[in-house]
Length: 249
Image 1 (spheres, rainbow, N blue to C red):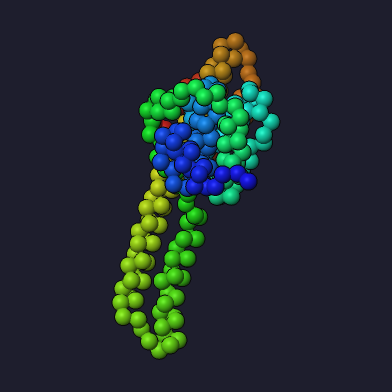
Image 2 (cartoon, rainbow, N blue to C red):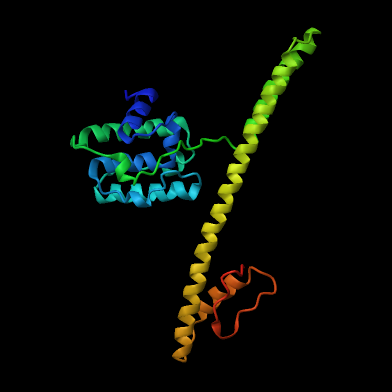
């Protein structure tokens, strides 16, 4: 039997000087990366997304963790798909394994977790239920007393007010979650747009080089067509000139 959730959270918080409250918050991957760093001291902590909120940020952390496992010949499979869903049982089992591995391999040396992550505070990752799921449950809970009261022909004094207050609180929480999701989606959009822009620049630069040599490359032209076909009516600039930075696809 491994340690309990409470014991593991206390250990993680003490080791990393953070303030997690749930084991499923480790699903972002940041804590796993730094626990392994406390053993070997060679995780590139500057690349770890300490306050990851989006799926692609979680995946960045797990890619770093997988690379470390490979470098140190740790043959434990990392169930990335399960862990990133931030479910309690999956993260509990993996953290129990991590703790056993740490006990066996930590050399007892001093470790400064805050310095290793350059003083970046680790905020508690959100472990949100899918949007809509919480609202249905909250609405059901709020309506249940009224239905029961009607069945008995009675209306509990103050019950409606309490139910309304709970419903308002649930809706307010959902609005905050949706706002956080929207902000995250905008960041994710910008992240992938920046990648497309980098590809566009590389393609254009290579085509300019080939044109200077009197050569051509059909693959590059096909890539360029794909990039520019995403906006109706967009025409490839003459002479392969770079698109203005303010222009979007």
